[in-house]
Image (cartoon, rainbow, N blue to C red):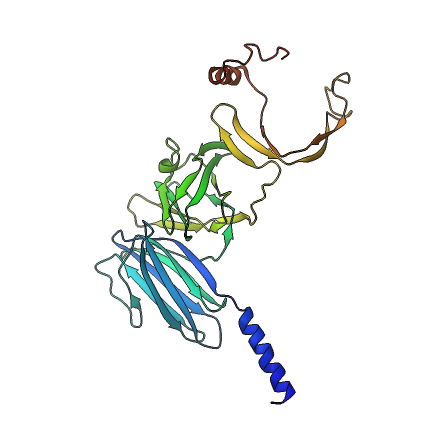
Length: 327
């Protein structure tokens, strides 16, 4: 074999070994009639490719693993209709509808699946490319509008172990709902309307949701918003805001039932006290000095009120009755 041909062959082997399969996540497919679930897999390459479709039901039980081909610069369409009146188009692969989740695993990152939902023969169509992102935190806006009556969201756990997630709702910067840790079983999904996550928090009572996990990075959640006739919908993917598990200074990590939000303060050095230029400053007791925190901590966002102190004393009676006294 000539040296240049050997070099080309060796380079090709290296490139082939470096190619990793791309896994795309579908956090929600449904068997509720008359929804029509559709997965269109596009190949943006000048050669045929392959992909596998895996489907789990809502309890995490494996329903299907199937391999399919997609031609060069072509699309393969898989449809799971829960509409008994659905008429397949030529070339479509039709599977039974499932209430659950799905993944598409492709042998090239130039193969991209699109997930779409249509409500029977209505004009409502929602579609988006399935994401391969795994992040520790996401932001999901509330897409409610005057002509909508409901909104909910879905989170997928594609792993072999349970996944712990937390959903915090905010309204104009203030926390209005916090689920605390919620456990999603392996290969299952967590799906509910807003009041199912935060009792008493209606569809218009929040602006955004922070969805996070300190256990594992997880796939992109999605929201579902609808009108009273169920013929107009909005499906929206969340946006990743933390690709690592390290919290940022000022992140709200806990919501205490008595003292409210607790924010993350990392270990390190800082200057305590107010600068001399600050208005209404008391010179005698607000001089600045260096301070050291040798460990990370969670701190309250506000000062302790007398009501908070009374509630804390109800839990821990050994606290002094007057919070201003010297311990």
